[in-house]
Image (tube, rainbow, N blue to C red; front, top):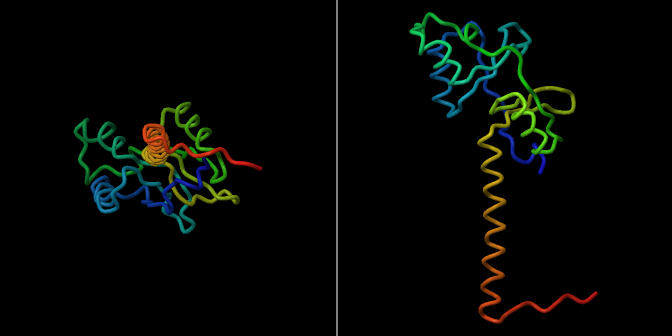
Length: 154
């Protein structure tokens, strides 16, 4: 399976100068757990990523004011990426190696076109496993009823 088959298209980003409350509202409204952080310049260069966990562990758990604390204060600099053309297993290895749950997905020119999350991978794998289970159940039913398909002839 390829990354391009399962990743979430588009990126939701926020300038590093915005506060945590604004980031939380954006995450809530978009139903996501991470935002790509931009430098806020005209070209919106990617500066890093901020997750809901970053906000909780690096700021809120320490008593930081979510209105006075900026995204740049808690973001993780840089973004791990994977190309659209990569195998999902390679992307999973990158996640495992770096202890992360999300990768920015890039096109053939290196531009970020979306995000691949562990949730995306789990959803795709559960669909595949469900199909496999259906095949097994179908074959078992055929064997029980005696309606086993005859072999194909060339």
